[in-house]
Amino acid sequence: MAAPTCWIGVAARAHVMVGQADGFVMFAHGKHSAVKQLRPGDWFAYYSPTETLGGKDAVRRFTAIGTVADSPPEPNAMMGATEAWMRKAHYLPSQEADIYLLLPQFDFVTDAAHWGMYFRKSLFKVTAADFSRIADAMDVGSQFNLGD
Image 1 (tube, rainbow, N blue to C red):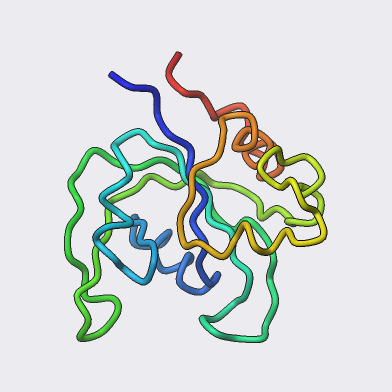
Image 2 (spheres, helix red, strand yellow):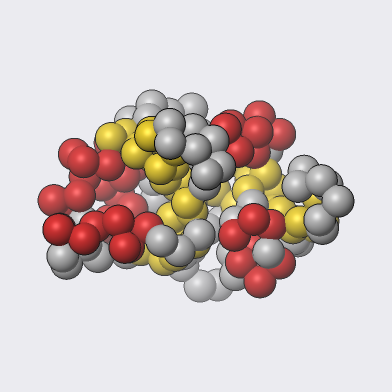
């Protein structure tokens, strides 16, 4: 069995809180192609640039962290009439982490002056080392493992 992959999802904090309360993850506004990339046991952390979708209410924090549950992608009506896809997930009780404290530590941010470009995607992979930095900042580092 392959080692779990580490992912960062980008979503408004209000949407992340709904997913956390209901125990699911959704990426890229519910696109099936995004959520089907994740496998059971994969790790995810959500980065929230704002409180609300399209809002000017800046958050700029990692707002939730957890693992993908052992279940297939399934449709969800959260997005109204549009068919959206989600996966069940296990969230860890955590604290939010300020992006600005982590940026200098990330290996994937090679141009600090344009760090926001790295978070333009709704979902992207990161190394275990970068994910471990996020987990530590969210006070769940002791629970992060890749099943070695």
